[in-house]
Amino acid sequence: MANTIRIAPSVLSADLGRLAEQVRMLEAGGADWIHVDVMDGQFVPNLTFGAPLIKALGRITDLPLDVHLMVLEPERYIEPFVEAGASLFTFHPEATVHVQRHLAAVRECGMRAGLALNPSTPLSFAEEVVDDIDLLLIMSVNPGFSGQSYITNVTAKIRRARTLLDHHGSGAFLQVDGGISPETIGAAKGAGADTFVAGSAIFSASDPAAMIGELRDRCKEGVSV
Image (cartoon, rainbow, N blue to C red):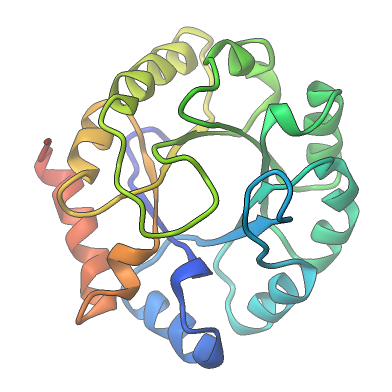
């Protein structure tokens, strides 16, 4: 699992007025997942999507819908999002109290359970529930807005996260989100990540579908910064 590269374009940067067209473009470029950033304007200073967009995406594509919740009390969204068609449900430990309980509930509903760590959130949060996660998301920016620059110090954290997962024999995906581009993806891949969220780099490219392939190629080349 860890040797497979997954590219998950974030529709936060997409033109929602052309959503179906943009998703078809992502599929043509070889995207593995569609990443959906859900923000409530409280946990982060932005307000974005909810279950209606997830349902709309499910009508457009068969690709897994990778939902990242930057919201308070994410447990309130488990049932609505599984009904909407989410495949992966990732939340932040600071946003709730009973993290392990909610990870278990996500799995019981049939979704894969993910835990997201902000740049300043200790990796120990994940260590305590490593057997309960299917995905560990390391944020390489402070969440809330697209188009931010990759925080280079996070590369060392990605490396420690890979060591943690391997030490526990975990098959969880190791995902990185924030500032991923052809110039930064090699560092994250070299540190042990296998799944990459990219928004601005893809949707601002002159050929977004080709950019997906370029990101994948840069991973294979082992390019680093």
